[in-house]
Image (cartoon, rainbow, N blue to C red):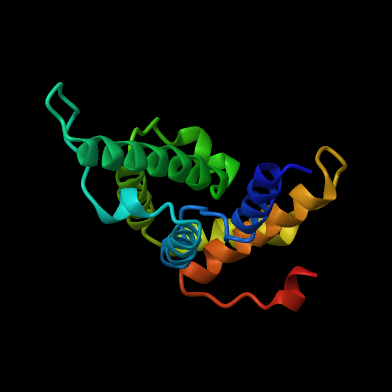
Length: 164
């Protein structure tokens, strides 16, 4: 296996260990994704504003920074997309910059204010879910875990043994 393929594979596996953003777990997700991007040395785009466009008189230092920032932004966006639940990903607008992505995720999670009817609907959905074979068992369990995480983030406790 080529060294670059190994690095990419281990990087992708580490990204899969980051909790998936489901619209209700912003704090946990953002902590984990920022840590992941830092470990991968991709957090330049989160730490600095967008660089100015290059011009003919740009210095080598400016060109080098611009290239590093563009790479960081491109790979960060891919990692951020990988760490979202597909149902959220579908409704998320196309974003050009990782910083905007993080901000929009925060706004999205804050706009989902918990209320009793929403909690009740989620609890009803969780308690009546049955595996019908229309998706993989992994997807079914992931969906149940995501619903439980939403309920927990709304302030209710859902014991893991309840999910089993």
